[in-house]
Image (cartoon, rainbow, N blue to C red; front, top):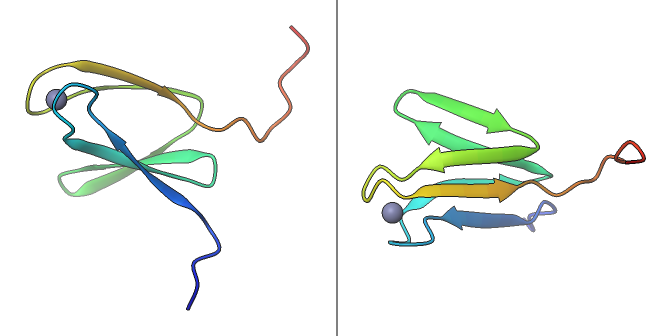
Length: 66
Ligand SMILES: [Zn+2]
């Protein structure tokens, strides 16, 4: 019954519209009939206020050494 995978809302920084959900190092973004699952650097334009929002998914993977 417990949810082992933590989820975190990703909301517009301006109007707090829900843009997606962070889960397991990825961002899930619902768009009409599709659901996009994105990793890495994510940008989304808020459907309500057109603010450009950016986020970075949790880096579970080792980054290549600079
Ligand atoms: Zn917004």
